[in-house]
Image 1 (tube, helix red, strand yellow):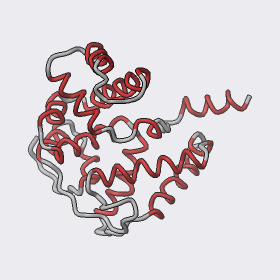
Image 2: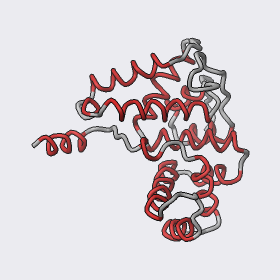
Image 3: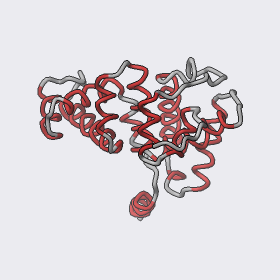
Length: 214
């Protein structure tokens, strides 16, 4: 009965905890994007990654799972220009686009980047620490019955993933940092976000300049 109840809650919640396994995956995303840009189908990309163990994971099952996760995240972009940019642009640009892909794929990341990090930039509050992550998850657990079922260890792991994601994109210098760094959105990402009428995402990249051009 408990399992059925949790499954029912999961089915109606916009949140999930798969990031405990998937995380930021920059190298894997870049590798997958490059193969797609070579013209391979999604199925062929997975087979190539698995056959050559391009992710250097210990088991074929884990390699396949991560390859499929990367494909889902790239598909969430719905933009071939951004996929190509992940494959070809400098690492800092590609990472920023990977962060946007992560936001589009995972509501947990979207809400965190927009409602926590974005609001920090909007209010010019550069302070950041464990308390911000704690408050974010406390709020989610109060608002969403499925999130409320997550174990303390799951929540702790998700906090680690989000903190490392911020480090990887230079929002903070380390998981123990107490301050947000200024960030600058790359033009290719800003243009794509505006083209897709997805301006709500801009605050996550410290971008508050609204343009009438598309």
